Amino acid sequence: MFSRKPLANLTALLAVPFTLALGVGKFVALRFTLAGKSIYFVVIDRFARSGEQAVNTTPCDLPADWVNNTGGGFCGGTINGITKQLDYIQGMGFDCLWITPPVESQGFMGYDATNLFQINQHFGTQEDLVRLSSALHDRSMCLIVDIVLNHMRPLLVNGTVNLSSIVPFNEASYYNQRNRSANQTFAQYVASWPPPAFNPGEDNAQLRNVSQGEEATCGHTVADHTECSCFPGNSGPNCPSFRHADLSTGWLGVMGDLNQSNPYVREQLLSFVKGMVVNYSVDALRLDTAIYLDRDFLPMVQEAAGVEIIGEATVNNLTYQASLMRGPGRPGLAGLLNFPPFYKVPEGFCAYQIGGDFGDYSHQGTWFHEANLMGLGSVLSLQHSSRLFGDLELLGNFVDNHDEYGRLHHYCRHDTLRIRQALAFVMLWRGIPIVYYGTEQGLDGHQSRDNNLGQDALRESLWQTRYRTDTWQYRFLAQLNGIRKDLGISIGDAEVQGLTTTSLVFTRPGKDPSLHASKAEARRS
Image (tube, rainbow, N blue to C red; front, side, top):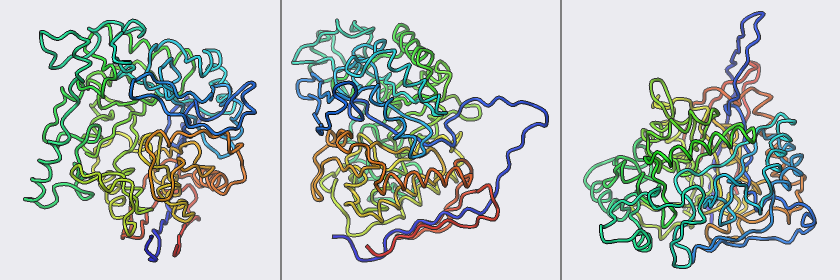
């Protein structure tokens, strides 16, 4: 049960104006940027059907096969279906649409590509994607496409390794083979599970031992270890077994881990990136599993794209996070998904635990007795005071997504006040707010209030909601997007002014000095 104490308060004070000055009599052509934009994120296969299937509103949440690695799980969502629902998306005030990888893949999510240069026939055609891009631009909206450069589909399918169907990487030499013995065939190497990026069990044991002997080794007051955990994808140089070379050559299970040091691999990946942007007039890219790529390859990808790239960097080390972004004298990606604050959001607003200290995940998916905003506020302050980041406007903020254990409505137990506070935070804090499809309809991943059904449940279909525009969540998101634009707080500084376990107060610059405050307060629940 929740505590009967006051719920977390969120106050955004809008008091300081900003000025945009342009040269008199000069036309200034501004290059497109994601700074100041808000993003609506959809899974292509689950958002909207088209054609004869458009009238079929039967819910669907088929899982992909990760036992025999045959993929599948397609529910019938299409690119054309998305195009026909752009009124629905624009009605909430979003500037950009982010779609999951549209390329040919084994599974419905698209992150296990089989051919980088073809559009998945389950989703539509190349012409369909061109039409979606054009339709968005006609509305002055932008298109963000998800890409994966770290790996291809699982190489072990039904117990057999066969590369012949993978385009363009159909030879063993294109894949990392760290620790492969001289007497092993490539098939034997893959079947024995190649080495991962690092050893989380060993890491967490060492981190626990160090923490027992020193104060403030990890936690929300420690910028370079904001979580007391080391696990693949959530680590940094301060975790004991961390090595850059191992991170880029370690495999994610049996997903075909590409060797970006191979000239052919680099050439083909960069060609794919350029083609995706040019052929479909893409405005920005989201780069999956960015931390697993060679560090010297990231700036090449950013340069080849010619548009801003937002990287997925599931890390808890602010220095390491910032090092992935470009800045003065430092090459890198334009922006990142902002994971360090995200890890604190479920606990901060809804007392929900998504992680586990020192590798103990026995309480993951359960609720603390009380919510606590200290972690979230502290990480935000550390991030802004560190002066490490190239551009804080290009950090993407979110409260849930397709991977991270629980949807907002589930982990807040459908508590309207808590959900409002979490959404107000992500929409009004500095950076790019990203909202996962279905939030506006109260989707909860088909979870019960006391149990979690796993990752696949986070990816349910939307069509059964019939795209209602009268839900309180839909209207609330439209209001928040309106506030961002009307008050001029879509870009600009942010500063935490007050922080307790139950309240977070921050200031944002506004364009009108007569506007002093916008206050959202949740009372006893």
